[in-house]
Amino acid sequence: MAIRKIRIEGDPLLRKKSREVTEINDRTLELLEDMKDTLYEAEGLGLAAPQVGVLRKVVVVDMRDDEGLLKMINPKIIEKSEETQINIEGCLSVPDESGYVQRPKELTVEYLDEKGETHKMKCDGYKAVCISHELDHLEGILYIDKKIEVDEEMLESEELLENEENGDTKWLK
Ligand code: ZN
Image (tube, rainbow, N blue to C red; front, top):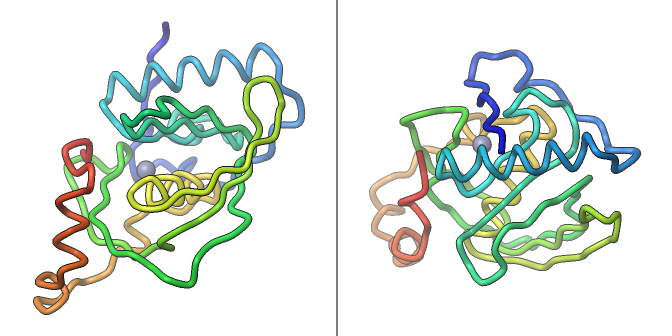
């Protein structure tokens, strides 16, 4: 078990694009294990490799649902809905802050698992938010770049209230 140091906003590495993993080797597996440990230690929902200083397309996500931990290598969004959702987000690289971001309501992500097998996963709700957020990290994008101002009317909208109730805001840091 190894906890890696999480890079904080302002670190130039967080703004760089990650490269694809061309070969899944021991280093990749070690990175995934360390990212898992780091995610749980920080009590986050997701973590992308650049957040621990590695510019590779590797992401771990655990929504604390039945699916448990997802280890994703070379993930990419292959389909997304026109329809969007607005939710509160936070980021382990931007401590003690949160903000509203608009993202697709549904998306399909394709990725490789540790054995190199391809998976296609359709998701919605806060899981779609989390995956979209983590994949942005691989492009050097942080949620604060996409943060929107929410006016009172929107704050009172049923959809947003419902999202806040169902959202995993307790995990946001
Ligand atoms: Zn983040």
